Image (tube, rainbow, N blue to C red; front, side):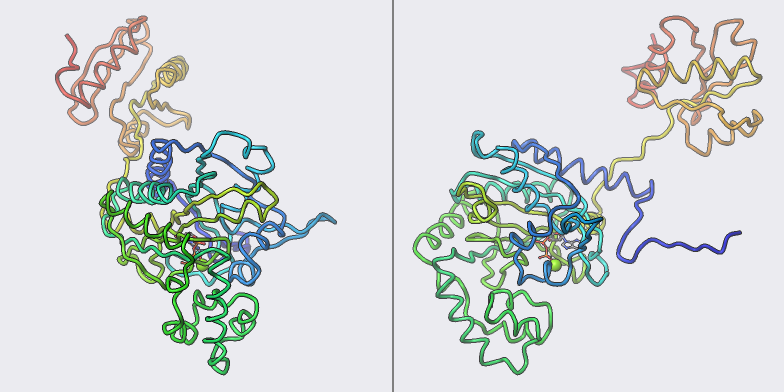
Length: 435
Ligand code: ATP
Ligand code: MG
């Protein structure tokens, strides 16, 4: 045996077939719910020009300062593996002329993201996000509609114990005053703030509110809150949002401390928390980003969005004992005795597969006994043993592996339809029984 012992990189995960059906369930719910709300899928590259993230996510954020996977390749410019989905989507919207299409543009994505973080439960270096973006509306009804979509996704997955926190972090107008107040407040604590936060004091003191260091977060607890500084427009927007959420009977708490980890947010920010999954409890984070499209070179266009971490959704779904679709199991195993029969089973398997059944036959060269053992192991619903005699008679004996019941099916043009009847009557009961 080789000495080579290569393991997967720290903070990454293998998703083996047993887990994949759970992923497919969650991804399926995300996709179908987004589509029910009129969103279309968009796919963007795994890596982007580093400047895109520095510009949009913000150069004082943890993501840009500490967590980016950046590569330079053979004299090209600098690229970064996407740490989040919004920046790439907005770049693509601008680059593909989609700002000239009818508003609102409603887009969703499911993608890998990469952040160099300390791996723990619910925090990985390669993780996956489902995200939705709504482009071209400044109305607070859009904020509420987007929150309703996020709440529906969680509910349809079967996650039943989340809390919704909302806040407004204002616009550049009200933020100027607020930033001044924050700078004044934090300046009294320069002896205890972490080094990163000291450097943020000048550049972007709001980022200190999102620092994960216990000392900084303790100091941040008594910092001035943005809600006291909102301008009239932002205040009205936030009040309307609360009114609409009340009318839609969506429960929420106003948490004036949430700022979110990305710089591009304006006005509304929100998160869904699921306490049962441990310390990394934010399953969804989102908000408005009215300035981002212009910042990235597009026409001034309001927009908003959210992202959910699929790994955390999965943890939450398991905790809520949500149901996952079953792994598809084999409908029929075609065992063969002899070479001629083997060829017939290959042809039959193809016919079954054309009809949408999951069919297997012996591609290993096993004895009949071993073939039947294998059929049991893969939990085939039906089996048929095919020998020269059956071929001559043109009749296939199809056996229900659970009851042992046998149906004789003629090998004619109705063969697959007859099997369909047999399978349906087994799966769904008598109304499908053979006449
Ligand atoms: P956190 O405060 O947990 O670090 P964040 O503010 O960095 O979250 P966002 O950038 O808003 O998170 O990303 C949206 C969602 O993506 C999060 O709510 C979370 O569910 C998921 N997420 C973010 N970072 C990770 C990660 N390293 N591993 C797994 N999921 C993640
Ligand atoms: Mg983070």
